[in-house]
Image (cartoon, rainbow, N blue to C red; front, side, top):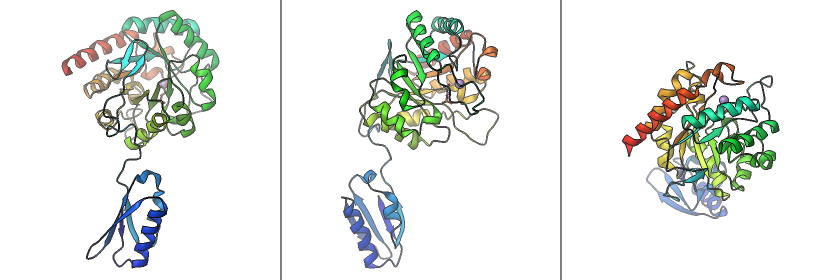
Length: 333
Ligand code: PEP
Ligand code: MN
């Protein structure tokens, strides 16, 4: 952190800043210019309450130098973490996670799972606990949905990724899921992130729809620093002024997150656009931008999906997307 004192700040005010920095266990490096005094804080500033220094008398500006995350940073962890999900090494090979928005009745879900497996997806996605904007919308089959997901794994061999909304559900969801999904609404649920950091299953962490890249990576750091290094990031679109699409898929966040953090980055063009017709072009764009894989909403009859039908593609469309993305990946090699 660099503290810039106001011009005319008194010696006592400068000393009070130095004392506060030392109270926090850090060293202060003072540089007296002709007009202003600048104080550099030497040590890990993340442990210092920023406001307690910025609010001191005579301080004009206090600027953080370090990022709000540490362990997921490539500075600390230069190699990309690879995460084994079933037969796929996420971070090394392209991964396609696909399935309906919500887990539906057993027959329909199994039918979809078989179709997406044949289309080339390696991981099945489906929400049993659904975080819906309106309390009147379908909230998911919950435990019955988890049971159906286990059946999908037994019958198709595909690993399962499903959303967890509450730290109290870690045990029950973990009995059925291979990967915990943290949705955009819960990216800031720090109790949940901390608890998932104490588990050994991979976590797919979606970006909050109003989260900056730094906030998203700081959320990942909650999980990583507790010992769970299996964090997969997922860019799923952010809110902008544009309402032609449901969200604005932030393509630039894909290479940015990959160069900043040691974690694989997926894209979700289904929630990222909200429109089935845009899913294929944005899937290709995401892989061209360096995405390590995609999460896609797929249903054998999108018009009958229990949720998010408008952004859901068919297994046939999924096959085309996978073929096209693999060709794009081959060109990059
Ligand atoms: C989902 O994947 O079904 C979902 C609810 O996504 P998000 O959290 O990105 O809205
Ligand atoms: Mn959905």
